[in-house]
Image (cartoon, rainbow over all chains, first blue to last red; front, side, top):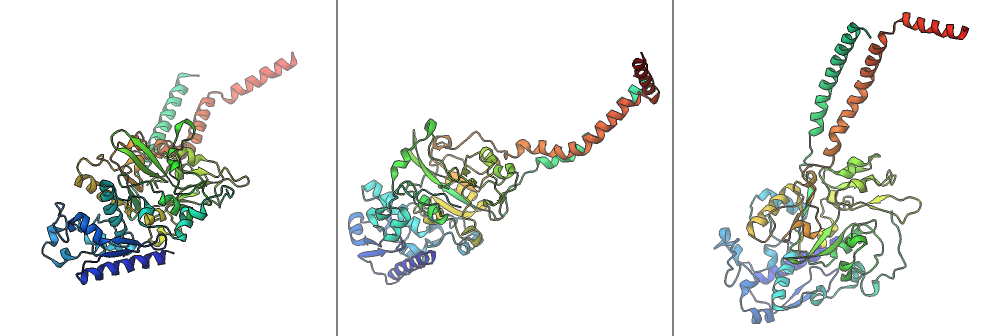
Length: 169
Length: 315
């Protein structure tokens, strides 16, 4: 199960990166990192561009008007790093793997120490804005669950019946 | 008792007492030593400002640890309003190694907080367990061997966070059960625990405890006014593997802020350190007292008593 999840992350990362390389602005983006538990999010990029009209609101430090936060700019100003638009180019898909933790700690770069992972970057960026703009904030508003998801959360046809209370060892 | 024997008695008593005091000194300094955690111990930094109360961690924990069917779906948000006796919110128990609660704070509104074992540097449960069921692993987890647990529940009383649960449902073999940091299935393979992996917000950040402390303090520094200037768990009861950041006062969101910095074992360490001394010295000390105290009763006196007895019998 973990492998599926991991490969889903990688797929999403590759998808985002190739979009950036092609320097095209996609109208819709399918976010399928969590596709074992949730259906892919059909992200309407065009609608968000029309509504917000400021790329930097989401793509902070990268494209459009740079934000005041500017943490990345301090070192990466004028470099290709800052031109990357895909979330996964900076936000790691697997932020807690032993390999990633090791490289991050070895790097000793304090600005990289607390970079959110890809999943958190999406959720925190989207929900923070949606709360202000009354956009959808419920989990299932953006991505309906798969059957595996229902099984994990004990919802849909997997809602507990209250009869199988057992002890486990 | 004659003057001379009293003097001898006091002298000898003084000598033995002095020796005992000297022997007890190294014991005391040993007792005061503290363990600050394994150097590569892992931990989790919980940022309560990020938690949205989705209960995904509860669902992931349930599956990872095979905790069986819950009472209701993990989508059920009414559990946040559940209170037990005396208005106590939900606690971890035998079938829930972690629970998320909602606290309605004065200034910061509703705050969600996950509760599970904090994986102390110097676990009180481990100290209190007389069958040595508990182990603090080098990865930072406090695990237990349920095969040797006799179900005495000492650890439940010792734990300053009221974490260990008891399998009251088991008639034949009730044991203590709690969060083990996914040690067997994940932690020792270098993987984060299931709750951390599923958290959509990264309210749970996994890493080396030492690094997480830096991250926690950096978040406080970088966001002035957002957080209470404290990483809960940095030094409470000797430090815990799980660390917490909060915008609301910690006592408002169910943390015990009266625990102090000393590990629970420090309350008994000095006492326990004197036990070997007592066992080694006291028999000799009191034998000496006894010998000295009875020395005055020479064989002459003893014989005299015997004679008196004989006389009584005759008369």
